[in-house]
Length: 293
Length: 144
Image (cartoon, rainbow over the protein chains, first blue to last red):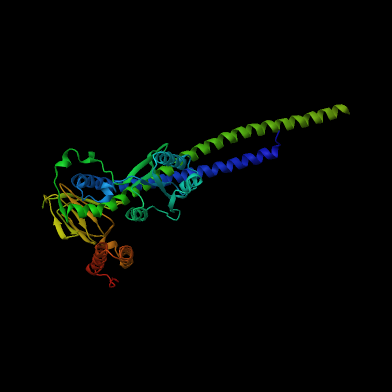
């Protein structure tokens, strides 16, 4: 049986752990709100952009002159997987889930005999993928110095990816990130960004009837917008990921706080029991001592 | 009171303005254009320049660095980066020019044999410098 002093120390240590997890939960809650706001702010731009792209892509998409970013290189031998994870841990299964999805994809592509390249964004994903697939990694983008995620960060990633595409390093690019549903649910998602897949659903109905004039002309607008589209998609994914990370951390820390509370209760009962046992023991000693006289 | 239309100015990070406007002067990459209600549906790309928004209450100016505009029933300008003109001081402006200069240098290194992208970047840089002259800030001649 552990002695009283040990129990007391353990209770104190679990209590301070609870304080830390509680504080982390509250910080995550505040950050989550900010991340959600940022994602909210970015939405109008992305929506409009996708609508315009969908109508542009529909009118230019089938011609032979369609840019490679839209039509693809005509092959799908080399795949680039951009795995976006967080820079910090202690956020439950957030990073593991994204990495798991990426790993499944890697195995599937391997079985099909494709060449795979992996670009990681965020320290945690790199650590997890390094163990098994260190030979596939072609680069890593560090965002640990970034305080507030801006469009510029997404542009830098996009520039990196587009540079590799121009150099003919890959045919298909897919980003992996977690879509934010709610605090308790984040969906790891794979999204193809090159060649761009703009769904035409958006322009079914009314908008399809609008015929736009293009200035300078459709091709050059498309050539101008496609690289931007990659940046936008990465930016949206980064923001979603940011909100998901904070949501995951919040629920993980909430669980941790609750578990610490239960543990404290248990330890306190044990502490009280042993204290009583000690008192009883002492009484017995005193009484038997007195009787012996 | 003049006829109005819905106008939205958005950048990837936030929505800057959403208002009923009478006309908007857009710095299109092929030349400036003014969009008024019932303008023919048009999509144009932007060059760095000043975007002027006229509402019934008065005019507002924004510095935009690029992006595109969609004119339809309503008008949406999706700017790469947009700042209210009054927020653009010398320091902000200098950063913008430096970015354009850096992008130009990079393009020049990457595409040494292709004039196309280099010329585009050079034009972008010159437009950026022209913005400074227009709003009365110190400009350095770009290193081309």
